[in-house]
Amino acid sequence: MHRRCAPRSRGAFQQMTDDLKVKFPERRTASVLLTILLFAALCAIAYGARRVILLFVLSIFFAYLMNPAVKFLQHHSLLFRDLRGAAVIEAYFAVLILIGLATYSFAPAVVRNTLKAVDQVPTILDRVSNGEIAGDIGDKYGWNDEQKARLRTVLVRHREDSQGLLRWIDRSLSQAAQIVGWLALIPVLAIFLLRDGDRIAEGAIQTFLPQKHQQSVRMVAYQIHAILASYIRAQVLLCFLSLAFYTTVLLIFRFPHAIALGILGGILEFVPVIGWMSTAALIIGIGMANALHWVWMTALLLLWRVVQDYFNLPRALGHRLEIHPLTVIFAVLAGAEVGGIIGIYLAVPVAASLFVIWRSRTHPEESPLAKDTVSELPPSVA
Image (spheres, one colour):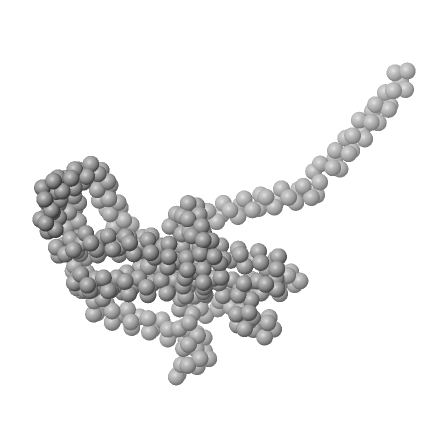
């Protein structure tokens, strides 16, 4: 009896072993695992090179900022018409001339007032932390002794915050040289993108994608191109609004070099969070150094920040990118939570690009900006 059952048992065990060898690991399972490992490796590489990637992303944005001027010179240049490389050089040369004129006209006085304000910052913050500045504010605006004592109590209670602000200023100044060095590379990299951007994108599509998917991916790429161009135009609009506000308010309060400070504030509007904070710190510091109405200026700057972030920005970006203003606010808040300042800067274009990709997959005939994009496409793609 045992002799008959033994061969069957050995045969069943052998069959189970053969099934396991065939079914595990399957080719599909191995492919999924390799895809996950490859994706994890790419994420690790991207995280390690995040500064370089950010540098290239900012270079792309700068290229979009310069592209309208380059296109205008390419079609209307008196010397090098229809030459892309020459138009790029002419546009950069014009920007350098404008920067030189602005530096010659405004820089000496602005630098002098800035250094004066920076030298007085430690003394002012020390008086703020001790509450001594409450007497100066009260005397300037005609407060009674009770109001002065109340403000002095509040300032002394927040002494650690004032000292922390001074330490943050010291750290920021020590990192300024490194940041300026990185930012100086952005225009250099943008030259290559302005000159060969179309060929780089077309070469990447033909190299990494099969023939059957190239046309659809090319259409999505051109729609994302239109999205980014609209995003930069909206940012320029916000910068002009900030320039007008800063200049008007500074002229009303008779701040020195109001036009130069307004232009600087408009340019720094491109830099999220740090840009407007630097502008506000500079204006308030100059107001303190010159005994001007810096308290009212601080209130107006905070009010303008609320208007700019929750009214102007959602409507400008939402109108340009054809997404709802609430979506813009959500994207900015989510970007701040995930990536901090960089997340704020990249949140809106990333959200708009994902929206374009999703619409191209689900409703290709109703994809946003399709009509405007087709008019800009090469004849073969259109």
